[in-house]
Length: 96
Image (cartoon, rainbow, N blue to C red):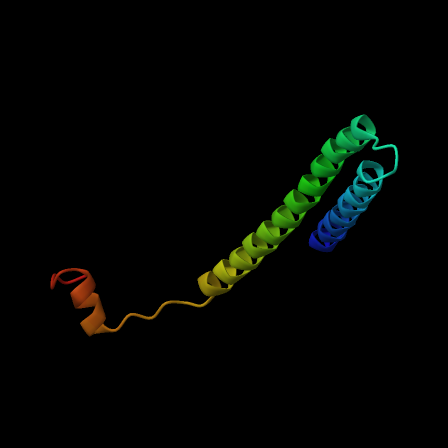
C-alpha cells in the first residue's frame, strides 16, 4: 500500500508542476510581459515536476524490489531435488 501513496503523491506533484507551467505561460504572454515573475515560477514548476517524476520512479522501483523479494522467498521454500546424474555433473563426477 505504500507504493500507492508514493505514486499518488508523485502524480499530484506532476499535475501541480504542469499547472505551474500553465501559470508561467500566462505570466509570460500577458500584455505587460511579467518576465521576472514568470521566470521565477518556471524554476519552481521545474522543481515540483521533477520531484513528482522522482517519486514515481521510486514507487515503481520499490514495487519491483518487493515483488522480486517475494518471488525469491517462494523459490527458497520449494525444496530442490537433484538426481544422481545431475549430482555427478555438479560435482565433476566425484561421489557426493
